[in-house]
Image (tube, rainbow, N blue to C red; front, side, top):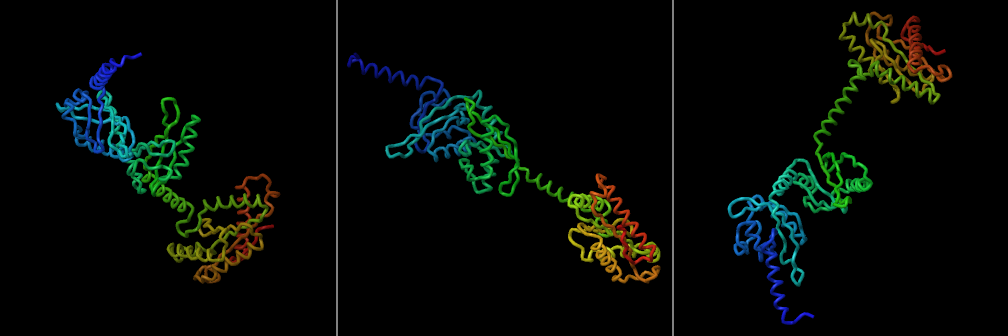
Length: 436
């Protein structure tokens, strides 16, 4: 049983021992009031900063930091005080009494009065100068890199972000690093939830492109683990690729224009022979699949060489344009295709059209050109006319079997060309069918 007379002695010994511990170790203990002014400091401050405790009391931590550092740490500490939360690992540079720099790692807990109001902080500073400069350098690189960086915890809180990320969030009117990510970017958050699942299952997380506030970003999430290898968040890189995407869109538009030019005849604006070949093969494939007829009309301007020689090449070009306009205006369907087959020849492809329908279309085409009433002194009629050969593909599968599509196309065009030859031999300015 303890003797009552010995208790004060042990109390004094314990108190002296406690102060020895506080004032003679490697860590500096302190308390500040709600305004951040030191109200108590352990004697270790003299070893760390070179100032006696009495000099430090009443001053703030920022009084011992270089101005830029005081501003940086002050912003971080203001956020901590506003949230009234504990903090740890706050790395900061301090200037000693002799002008040299010491790097400290600061941690603290909030203190509250009886009414629950924040009355200050109690904390500890540890000298990490050997490692601290490297940490601060890395923090500077992290904070100043133009690429947006952030860390998101499992609840969607943005627990860390650099200046570029702050600017990115500010573009949505959300510049606070404590923002709740599901509210800021709900669509992205759904993707990040999938990334958490992938990380838990040791599956690689792919990068992806996202659009936010009318800008394009390439994001690459990387899982963050704690000491026991549990996923605690995602570190996400946001690379602004807006300029690249806009350039790609312009290039795609330019390629589309080039492709259109590659498909069109420069003189008439009709599809050219190359595009006609592709279109005809596709329509033959559909006709084989659906068992429907397919017709073509091969038209040729009568005595065009004589017209060109007598009137000149410019007039010949104008004539081709006028004929093109007449053919296009001959009430063709949207699915029909008209192309310049070569020279003064035109090919019209009529999907799902039998021979009777094709002959009616051919007559409209011929009449449209005749209605132009273009003078042609070398023609027996005295004006410009066209001759047309018509061919129709029926029951292609039974007739051609497994024959290649290009062979079927060649046969169909041959029939139309043969019919065109008959039309010319029979006096021109007429329509002849080449289908048996």
